[in-house]
Image (cartoon, rainbow, N blue to C red; front, side, top):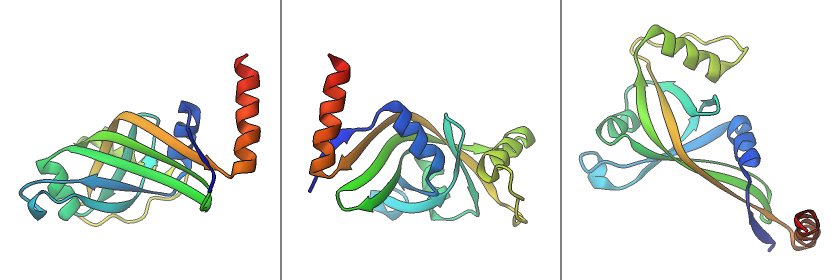
Length: 153
């Protein structure tokens, strides 16, 4: 077991920008009786919002009813070496051609956009609050603490 530290804003942005899959947590009293629903999501991130698209299903129905969501990404190399970001956000559907073009650029970057089925829903999660944590093994945590204490003096 290692030591857990706060991930700084640069580390938060880096993880949000590079993670391949995130998880949306959403809930609505009308869909699933208010029980939280958590689903994985392939996404793109532009520094302000998470962009995604997909067919109408449970997740979209819930977010339409209750647009306040949580979003999580993480990466782990070992049980005592990981990073995680949890964000709060607001679901917004994208309806204009300009918004949809931007979403496709953010999601697929320079890659080709696949054929999309008719009725594909484009949306973003505007992130309003972000926090992060990371863990280092005990021996590396000691070195890290010595470095940050030396810098702050």
